[in-house]
Every structure is written in C-alpha cells, then in structure tokens.
Amino acid sequence: MRFRPAYVYIYLYNKNAFSFSVSQLPVLDVIRNRSSIRRYKDKPIPKDPLSKILEAARLAQSAANRQPWQFIVVTDPSMKEKLVVVADDQSFVGEAAAVIICLANSERSAKVGPFEGFLIDLAIAIENMALTAWDLGIGSCWIGAFDEEKVKELLDVPGNLRVVSLLTLGYPDEKPGAKYRKPLREIVYYDKYGRREN
Image (tube, rainbow, N blue to C red; front, side):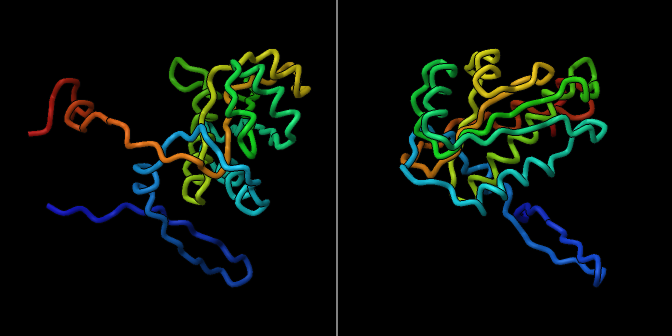
C-alpha cells in the first residue's frame, strides 16, 4: 500500500472577494528532517522570516483558546551573553542570531486533564516556531536548562508570568545526523493498551 505525502493546507481569507488561496507545505518532511542546532553562522535573521516564525506561534492552538503566551525576542549581543550565564553556561545561546524567551500567564491557563494547560499550550507554540524556522532554513534548539528567576530578573519579566522555555534561532553551521526514533509498532496500540495492529 502506498501513502500520499501529508500536507498542511493554509487557507488565506480575502474579506473583499470572499475567496481562499491554498498553499501546500510537506509537513512530514519538515518534521522528519528537523534537528536541534547548536552551532550557528554569524548571520542575522531578517525581519520577514523572523516575523513568520513568530506568526507560527501566534496561530498555535491552545486549551479553550486561552492563548496564554507572550514572547521576548532577544537579538542584542550583550543580552545574549547574559542569557548564557543564566542558561547553564550553554555558550551556543550567545552565538544564536536570536533567542526567543517563551512566557506563559498561568492565570490564563485552562486545565488539560490533571495538568496545567499553559505548559502544553507553550509546547505547541514552540514546536510551531521550530518547524517553521526549519522550513525557512533556520535552525533552532529548545533550551530547558535555565534559572527561571534569573531570566525574569534579567529581562524585567513580570512576576505573574512563567518562563517555560528559551528557543535559540540561527542559520545552521552544522549538519547533525539523523536520530533514532522508535517504530510505530513499539508505541501505538489500537482500541486498548497492548492491542497491536494485525
């Protein structure tokens, strides 16, 4: 059995003509090929692709459409060096063209089962940015090792907001090899846990 490639269909609404145009993005190829990048070229990201990356976050789905996110775009070299210190001395944070500080207002969060929705909402928005960046030829890396309070102090983040993650962005100066991913037969069941496809 052959499978057709999966596509994302983006509908652009024209309020004057009441018409839609469609663009096709081979989303599985982007997901399959994306790698975390920790070495970047000394090259700034132009405004247009950076805006598209941020737009991908803005358009993300969220629990009850609460959209609890806010983002700080850091491109100032001296500020990026200060972020290195509060991000567990990961030097590549300072070498990235931009660092996106991903914030959440937990008070706007909806519950997702037993979990706080803002963590899931921000994860969706960040993944949107990472995939869009890759499609534009821009690498990224999720940063989870950081001191939240020091990041907030450094960037004057209000006390009611949480720092969920940092996302580095830049043009890749490395080509990481493909990483192992478990096959579907190891992670997917049907109708009940443990029941595999025949």
